[in-house]
Image (cartoon, rainbow, N blue to C red; front, top):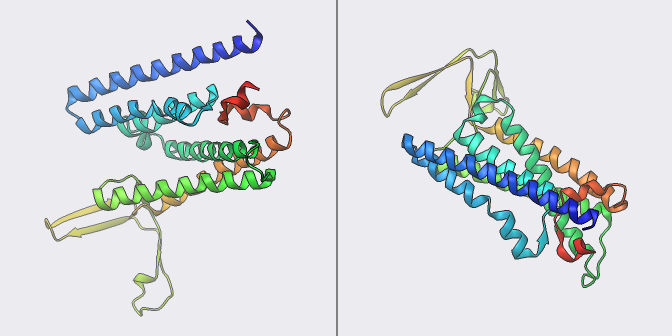
Length: 265
């Protein structure tokens, strides 16, 4: 057995161990939530198990080879977002948990977009050869499109299903032309807000928000897009360098799916 085959066998073993361990924790979490009667969380656990099958399905359907590193990161990403983030409330416990995941999403999405174009670029049937800069640009745009589409999904879920995927935040400053009493296009600035009271006519209830005003998700949305931008930009630059010198930046192959025939070569 050659050194390469031994390395691939060891990586496959690590991949299987990570996959099985995470599935075990998901099943334990599902049983726990079922005993508590939290059926929404049970459904989320089941969805996570389904999502864990996507790398294998994608690999077989598109005849691509997923690097072990990429596949493990995908598993960890799904687990961190659904089980830890949603069910265990890591989004609320750890301030930057959501930021970390959106940055990683930008990086991974760029890697997938990059691989799609790079595969075409290396296919003999594709007669147009794209420059490294163009391939990197497409990868970046692909990642940003995925990021924007996800924010559309979050807004839709919040707007029509009364969720809070955009994660409202407490702010101490409001700038708005809506508050201009003369109806001019000059913003009124209210800062150092220490308390907000909301009156609801439906149940005659007064809701008091201490330490500021409740932002309705715009800060979270823009922050998510900015960190997605950073993740996409980092990989796009690395992808550009990889095409220029595949031997020097060979570590990029750990994150890029390739056609099986390319892997074999």
